[in-house]
Image 1 (cartoon, rainbow, N blue to C red):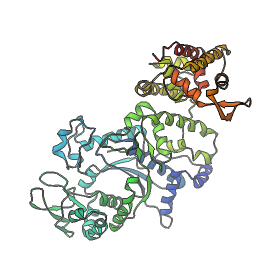
Image 2 (tube, rainbow, N blue to C red):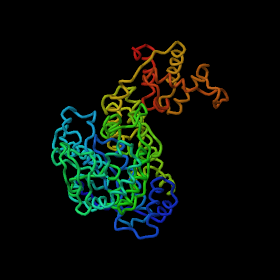
Image 3 (spheres, rainbow, N blue to C red):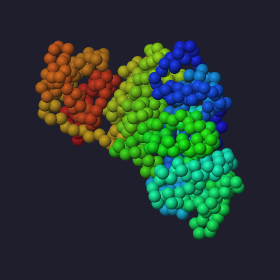
Image 4 (cartoon, helix red, strand yellow):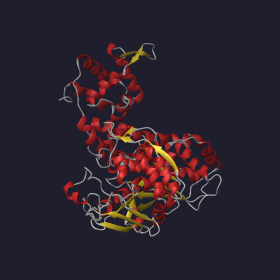
Length: 554
């Protein structure tokens, strides 16, 4: 179990920050204000508890990380608004006592797990091998590994450990006394067939070890016992305490809130219809429902909901293979109530946007800073990083040069930006590794060079001549203008909805799309002038000549 401190490191506050926070409309502050309003008429408890839930039925995916990242942002906003005078905790709770209802698609030797269907996840053997004793323990460790790498201040909690240690015994006894009231909440939400057998208590068979979805014959609230028929038909009495029985997932939500005194928990839109059920059960069991934030779900490249068991979304490790963690945190911060596709194509843009926000931060006043994602990503203390070359440009530089190592890339970068080196710009050096990996795995396999038609050949030949005639020290703007001056006199590239500085028609984006299709084998690219200045004027001319000779399309 993670032993992180129950209180995050002290934060730096000034009157300007506190005033700006009170007025901020950034969504973490809006959520934090709900928690403050929750205790408006009463004193704060010893600790305000933030919670996230995790279902370890499959390997952790980015949506799981998103809950922790976003909740941490709300927690930090709350600490700022309360001037860091109220203790807080973030509890990451794993429902690892749930029965394995189906075998995930992305595990090795699925057949080997079939005998363990419906057993608690922490009783299912670990299909991945290694030091973890069960499937649930392995998946919990995968989650904790990433959270620790990112530096979250959190405590990890296991449902198996909590149930077996008796930490839910009191609320389970209360559930026995309030059994009828809980059933009154649950039964109207179920179909007729399910109502006939439903019980909020799920006994774990003393004989098979499986989590049983069976009718409960009798609930003895006085002695905290239930009576049911085991799988072999034997009538069995079982204590509801000590981890011998768990609650169905909907009652479990509300019971956990009541038992632990949770003040804030966010969840995906797929839980929204059940929120009223969770809240009512929490109240029945003597608790106060926490403040909620409902976020939209992530989708894969086909627009389907990401599923842990299907493995159809990006994993945490996959994102971190191609981009820094801060870019992932930015993706979580932006538009949390809007459904977003989460697949490999979103990574480069997220990386560049992160550094753009970082570059803007020093120029902003406090009102703007507290709305800037990097303030929330870095807990109010963003690093001072200057990135002379965008990530997207690095990708295109790798693409044009077919660079397979950083030395080649740094040769271009250092020539373009004298004084910039791996030692002076370690963040850029880190990004060159990401760019090469991303290019090799995703850009290079998808490259399709096409041969230019006759009119395109003439345009490219003219462009090469114009670039060759430019002074050796021409900058990105001069190169861009040279390209525009070629295109604006070719009818197929004229955009009559735009006006050039000379008063004629502007240039269609089709001209630059043609350049990237022919020269890089890609549909899109960065601003041509910026790319050519970084790659080198002479190198760009040589690339055009190679395309005209048919060497790229071949």
